[in-house]
Amino acid sequence: MATKLAALVVLAAFLAGPAACEGASICFNGWLRLPTYNPWLCSRGSRTRSLPWQRGRSPSGLGLGHGYYDNRWSRSYCPRAEGIVRGAVRDAVAAYPGIGAGLIRLFFHDCFVRGCDASVLLTTTNSNNSDTEREGLPNKNSLRGFEVIDAAKAAIEAACPGKVSCADIVAFAARDASYFLSNRRINIRMPGGRYDGRESFANETDQLPGPFSNVTELQASFAAKGLTSDEMVTLSSAHTIGRARCMFFSSRFSEMDPAFAAKLRTQCNGNDDTNVNQDDVTPYVLDKQYYENVIDRKVLFTSDAVLNSTETMTQVRENANRAGAWERKFERAMENMGKIRIKNRADQGAEIRKVCSRVNN
Image 1 (cartoon, rainbow, N blue to C red):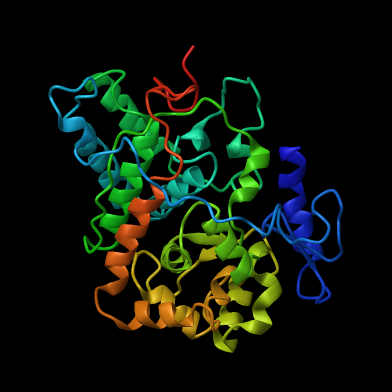
Image 2 (tube, rainbow, N blue to C red; image 1 turned 90 degrees about the vertical axis):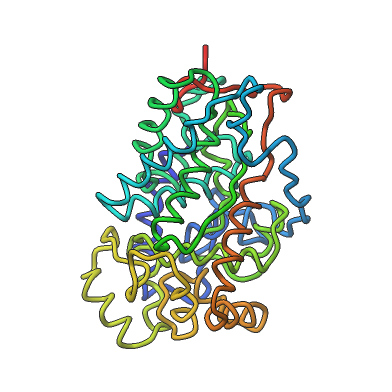
């Protein structure tokens, strides 16, 4: 199923290009744009999997704590853990800034499916299925940063085996990537204490909001995880870094700033698999330039462009214009996202993995 979906995204992008009709069908929670309704890929009467969503509980983070691995009287004592992760991220970002964007995205894609339990890293699961989240439509051949997580995990296991979860390493890595990519302007207080899950399924990745999502769908997807519309607008700014395939925005050139669209047409050159920078102004800096881009119609995705609407424009302008406001909001939103459906030692199917890509025996 996952392989078929991944192959179909290329076909869908081609079929639903600029010549497609205005009534195109948006499916898989905003990840597929098809020229006509497809009953296999879309649920009739809805653009997404199960709208309308009911609002989920606000993430509690029960069991998490700041400095979680610093308590020498705890069974989880590993004082070098966070420093090891920061060093691995620092070196990776210095070598290639794009990997930092990948680490932030990895955290988001982990927490929105089954909670922050490192299920996005699994290739071998308790159910022995091969169609894990990594094979899901939003993730296949696009997630990055696994090698940074693996390097940090190996170093931590050598220092204090069986103490630090892969879920916490993913969260710490996103925190540190945000710090380095923002030129140290963003310093997230990310607690620790998450445990790792043992299951991962590709078909559950439709909980991730896609690039063709509208405002209502974005708000609903975030609300389902207990996050607010303001947090949705705040976290969307992660699109100020990283790259994106032309297939996800080539259908909306006519809606963009003309000069920006012309530049993108040249870069894409008719190849929907070409990758371009998401932010044309400061592509390697995590900053509030994203909101200026939204206002100026210089963003790639539909899900970015729709923030220039009456429902969200107040937050967009505030984040663009108020010095320091967006940085503090981003810190809080990332910390809050890191509390979604966490697992702790008492939960069934929770563990500290020895290797992040596979469950323990």
